[in-house]
Length: 314
Image (tube, helix red, strand yellow):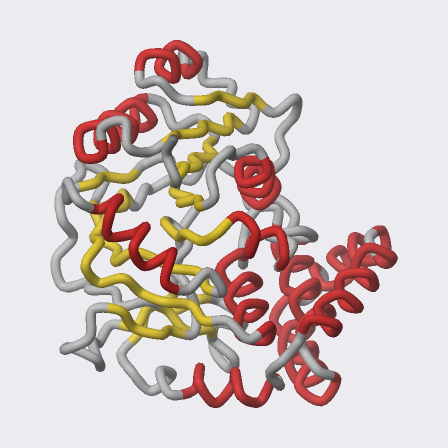
């Protein structure tokens, strides 16, 4: 029985799903399970037939649930102890990536691991001069948005603690995901890396970059999901309300309110619809917290002076 499931939530990916599945099977064979979560695609591709061809499990959402909930659905339905969540437009290169990943996952299950990103253009060619060594979270500019760490400040280490994971490919133990409540509360897409990474730190765990596992990620011109700005802004408010202490929350609130204009009111209306759920999440995360928020700001701040670019990944 396999120990790892690759979870691939997707929407209207077309042939990219076929190419991603082929890449996994070419490098990993049948040493991993694969679960496709189709978020109600309407591009008429026969994803279920591709799933059968490559021997994967397959779920089709009954309506469009968004990236965050599709990822939750995926991890909830795996039969293995560990998961690797990836986007639907990825490429694998190393025939030993499964063994390398499992070795790290078993060493520390109180952690989320991300693989090194090899950025690819729409033709699948390497984008030069855009190295990525994990991410940190913008607290002044690019509010709460993950930003790539462009400099390898630990060149002699193959496994590095980082403030924030890269969202295109990250892995962990299913039990730890459930303990953290996954991405519960987020709507549609946006800020899942921020939400999960801060929860890991406050709970007492770590986010790691695995330099020895490099996965190609195609950056597209047009994302499949529509930009529902009020819901994206709501995700910021969710993170503030569930994870930030009062003394830090107000400053960020004021900055968001200033930069978002009329959208802030729309996001607040959504927020009121989820008030009870947000309160329950806040209480739960307070109950499992073992580190204070200032310790996260200190760790995250070590990277803010480095050359960085915002992560724009759908």
